Image (cartoon, rainbow over all chains, first blue to last red):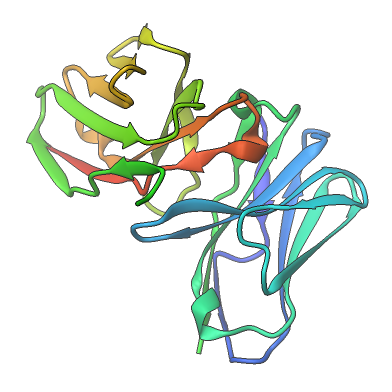
Length: 113
Length: 112
């Protein structure tokens, strides 16, 4: 069974803090994704990585960066958290870039005060 | 106007009812259509995956795509309390997860 884990289920940070969200997958998947999920807006892609050290911007990358130093781990970084980054963050991984192989983690609910 | 529109609900039905969930879209380039189920405090899981127009059935679930009307549906027969979840539609022109566009989700509750 594919397992995608995220480091925290709930996180509360203050405006201006640097925030790290960690995602780990245990199935040797090439592709990893970070989404945010907001009411009324669905899931929106922040960043995508198709290999170690390789990344591609998604639809809403502003205010975020990512790091993929090892195949199994994909980190999302909020350089200076702002209140409009309060959201549910979902990590996903997939064997190929095809949608039918994508598996999601349980999500991190981030609140920025 | 959003590319993918989905009625957020909430939708409550009695156990055993037939449920119909729908999405409309504006981008005629979409070719691959998906339905995800998301339980409370969990990530989405892929439920149905279809290409182009037509129907696809899997147990109690049927996905229907009408590209001429830019309209997709998910039908759940003999609904169960365990079907209570948020259902998200998603679509892409290429089959690539890099180009997925999601609907906002419909919250469904099946009452015992």
